[in-house]
Length: 599
Image (cartoon, rainbow, N blue to C red):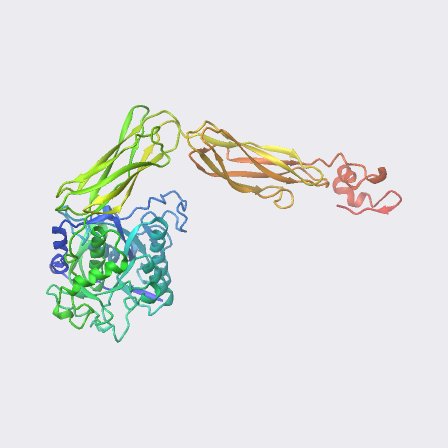
């Protein structure tokens, strides 16, 4: 099924969305968002280098760009998300345009408070691009993959993904898509959808009587609540836009969708109109709410958004939306600031101490004194050997939003991998903890990591049963931490299953160890044959690098000595050894004229 973006229709008038969405009221309360709250953008791609977007684009810490699927989710180097159109990690393709997705991103999370460009509804957020729309539209099957990608990120890594923005429509009903929305709903990811821009006549339609997808889906039976929020577009005067679909039971609320100024590729800006432009206002407001209401479920967030809209009665939406109201990002009640701590790193140095400086941030300034406890914990780094354990309580006076915690790390000249420790937050007063753990990385600056090498081995095969061929793995220098490496056998002239038993797995060197072995079972036989070989390949080292990474195992034939058969008669093996390829034609009989069968 083919889907299309809802909008845009380019126009040239003044942007009015901070007033019509009440986002400015939330900002005035100190609520401007938090980078540890995430939203997915299921749309075209995003120009992630745009100066108003770059700081709020998600970067995947679990899968750096190295050609390997490090986090095992099936997508290699998905550093900012995934392009399901071209099936690669390039979430922005200039040749495709990607203006619609970039415009949507700016409305959700354009960087605010910097005196330039535009400000999104939330100034701080992590935006994940899941591109499934190209120049000619997209496929529902790819939208399913995009949603499952977001659900997997949340389930696998515990990311606080609160919503997926869906400024698109078309393709009709799809059970596969409904199921994917339901799976996301179970993970407390809201599905914010454009109500649609009417038919070919450009006049809005009633979604109660003519279903619009995906905004008409409902996840109540799948997740116990309806995660779908359908959004109509209003103009600068608060009137329902002429092109906007509506529905007293199927469209939830209105949001600004006419003449919306936002980001465009190449560092540009432009005015677009459509329910596509209304939808990201709601997504941004959801992220804003989540930044000040830690741990709120998807159902609770939707309830809060619709309650605020219901309290913002808008006559043009009466009988046209479920709430008869418009988005009110400033009407979410008392702002409860959220606390988060960042990840930091420092080069260890050769001696003395260096400082890891963690920053603990409140998502909004508070009129009350806020306190929170902190304490370090070991990761691969050890307190007393790599750093000094630290604990205590941070106090934020009224109006203060940031505090720091300094952890001393100890320098050395030992070759080792990078090491980590954690700073954990707990026991907050007058605030909620949104991100309770910061990771501190002590970067090794000493000699290169020790290398792992494997030797070559040769053994006689034996006549029957099996013999173990023992490969030795050597570490060039002892390490302070465990070292591991994967291995697997590869056929050469020897064949797994008949000449040897295939082997694979992982070998671990405990701290201080420099030798380990791998045993490969070799099958014996009494058949004369040439020497045979296979390889044992090393890969994926941890806390080390590869030296000689392939060992050759040679299975030596030991059957030449058995040249005499039963009762002293010459054996077939002898004839083969003596005559080679001429055996079949040179000798047909042997010993009393009995025929020989060749090997």
